[in-house]
Length: 412
Ligand code: SF4
Image (cartoon, rainbow, N blue to C red; front, side):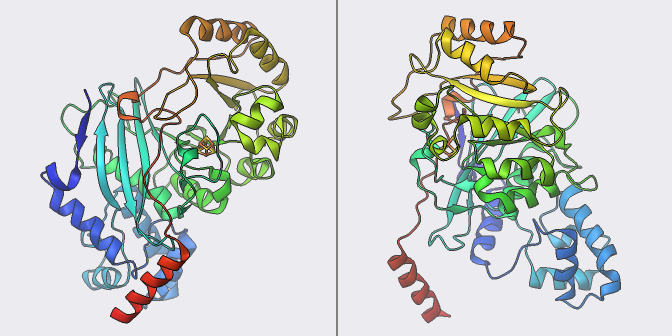
């Protein structure tokens, strides 16, 4: 059974949530304070007349309200003077994006469809974010782009053309709004019956494995993850943040050096001729170049291993020879191998390997000393499983965007 909540229709708080989102969309002219660095927050305060000597203190106050308390309304910032709150409200927004839908799987996995302003795409854009609860942890799978430029043939997102990159605000907002909906901020309440970890925080891990290639949106992803891991705010340990790339080799070192998070590689094949088809970016940076970059990943050690994702495709990449070659390729790299049973989507050309085949493959990899958990598919019934995310957003053609802008200009 799948539960789908159309937020705007069924939720008792629908009005508040929907109108908050709508005003954010309409009020695009108001810049957001979410996703700004502390320095940028200070500068933003300067634009509304806050003296420079107060920037640090005021930025810290805002930071606390935004990322520790999770408020989405200036009026709730009770230790900030009323007149300053009014000025902030006049000049800026901290509103959440619109939640288009929330789906809940039988296994407790939640998938949200969020809507953000067009920001050059013509129409508002939509992305999916997934929450996967497990014993002792809650993982949020975050998107970095609307659509994707890459066309990995086993991935549903790969069939959606890139609409645009998400901003740092939009990446962070996925975390904030998921925590809102789960009741994971102080004084908030977890929805009755929700499947969540039995104690502690409800969002404990972030994986940049949603829609898009995060390393093709490096600066925004970096900014968002540095804010997410800031110890005075959302305070997620960098060891609990994993960025997954299909293999954008030139950005891999920077990921470790400038973000310092854990790394995952969408490997999926052990020979270039196969990987060229499954993960076509391989034609640009082949397996050898990719693994060389992995060997040089800053901080790589047995305590900070790279995760290699390997989707199990029947008769494509699942033979014993493939498993042995995988072991040979990864020699010397502190690694963990995630075996992912293929999650079908409408129109996909592959089938999932048989369970016995996956187990035999896993045994070979295990015997070579690698942890190789077989990832239980989660949220398949709501199309929330790995490789299944896709939204219907499309970028308007330039001609239509120009016409729309001209129309707007005539109205204002
Ligand atoms: S696997 Fe990642 S990089 Fe490849 S098409 Fe899907 S979203 Fe894009």
